[in-house]
Amino acid sequence: MLKKIIACLTTASMLACMSITTMAAQNETPSGIPIDEVGSRIEQWASENENEYPSFAVAVVKGDELVYSGAFGYIDIENGIEATPDDTVYEWGSCSKTMVWVSVMQLWEQGRIDLNEDIRNYLPEGFFHNLRYDDPITMLNLMNHNAGWGEATWAMQSTDENDIMDLGEALQYAEPVQMYRPGEVSSYSNYGAALAGYVVECITGQSYEDYIHEHIFDLLGMEHTAIGPTHNDNEWVYERRQQFVNYQRAADSWASNGHQLCFILPYPAGAACGTIEDMALYCSALVSDENPLFENESTRDELFSATMFCGSTDIAFGCHGFWPDDYEYATTLGHNGGTNGGSANLEFDPESGIGVVTLMNGSGKPHQAMAELVFGDPVIQIPETIGGDFTSQDLSGLCISAKSWRRGPLRFMSMLGLMPITRVSEEEYDVAGMYTITRFAEDAFYLQDDSFGMAAEYKVLDDGTRVFGVASSGYVTEKGLVAELILMCLYVLIVLVAAVLLIIKLIRVIAKKNKPYAGSKIITVAQIAKIVSAGVIGFWLSVLRAQYGLYKPQGIIGCFVQMLCFAVCLASAFVSVKALTKGGKGKFKYIVNVLGNASFATAMVVFELMKFWSV
Picture 1 (cartoon, rainbow, N blue to C red):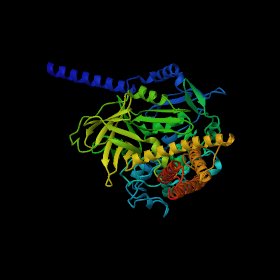
Picture 2: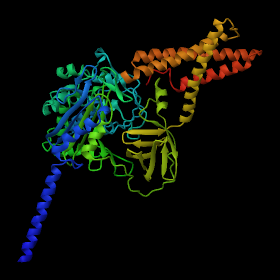
Picture 3: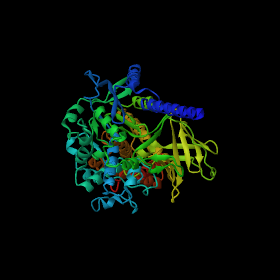
Picture 4: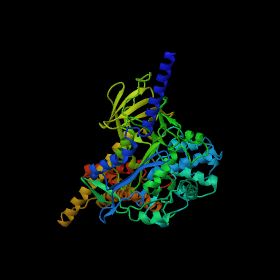
């Protein structure tokens, strides 16, 4: 009898301890901070790190409860306008994409869309014009950012409200070239996410803007958030966005970039703008037991399930458009975002129901600091080695971002993001002295530095292209990259030499010591043409940030100017060849001129500086 009593007391004691432990966990963040101390810890960080932000807003939720919301600093330093959590609006950037995926899953729940169906079955007939492959493009391809698109040549943003067009028209205007077969290469695509929003339009018959208001904003009481390209779908937001000033870090201070009011034409990809407290409502809906965004809990479970893995491992790369992150005390899902106006971060732990959202009128440490405060330090640990042949495949070589411009007049931009990978040992590689890559499976690596770590996959396509993929960012080793790099260096060198020679000629003309020779005029004109060609590139670069591409008149006119420069360079080379055949003095300068113009013209062709069609 005594043994039974002792056993009962022991069991009761254990249950009581478990209950206390569970209650404690329910009243703490995953990192162990008591819920009622979260606000003070955030405010402490903000006061100790005032030089790390112009302003930022933060909110922490637990289920359907708002644990804390606050804002720090100034949205307009020069005019002393302070940030507040309920009256200051910030841009969400790519965090907006998560609402596309929520919308798609709402339709999936209703049986109105099949995630594995070719999206062309939902779009108007003949919608695409730049597809290279007949393979189906599915909604899962759009969610996983592996439909095969690179960057768009044509503008996806504008500073003029009059440039706004219907979503379908904007997508056809900016359609990029499909570079890879669907499912083969991950390439983060704003175009693909916006296209998914257009699929929502086509299925529902509503504009995407109206759909989001009805099925997310109105449902959750998000009265202070806009989703339209100009933000005028919410007059309150539209007015307050005019107060917003973007800042860029300059040494120990923040320099104003002005209002940076840019309108995203394919707007589902990044146009949301609102208060931090509204963003908290959205984050709460994603983790709340009430599950207000879906009819069934199983739909949310499906949304948060993995759709993309690292090679043959079980490491999740993506979950229906949400990105997983490993912290010391939680594996979160979420998305970050950035626009010309600012930056954003949305992260939540489905297990504990705790989420943190941050918004900023610049970019900097608050996003990561707030996430670490709630979830702990990021996990930087090479996964346990999985057996395989580590010697058969060599990752070393020059890689280029699959997201870059690989077709059209902006192709040269892709060379600015080259990633050299050098083999250090059988299992380890070095990336430009910045990262190390360690193989832990035959088709999987771990990319890391002192503060960052992420699994990456490796595969070889049928055409021999090697792919190194980090979640939604793929890098490829294409044939001829070294030759392209040499050509680009030659292009730059020839432009510099042309500029120097023109200055020397100008000095000689002023000093009346310039001596004309056979073909000297066309050679001089060709030197000017090289400067003009580089000037066109300089102009394109100057408008890229604001427009995220080129307006078609800018691109087409620029390409015609490049054609003229190309023709002049060929004419200069021809004149020099003609002079060489006649013999006489000055052979060296004619040979150099032929080689220089031939190299320059070749670079123009390879980098497609004259190509404005099918891009």
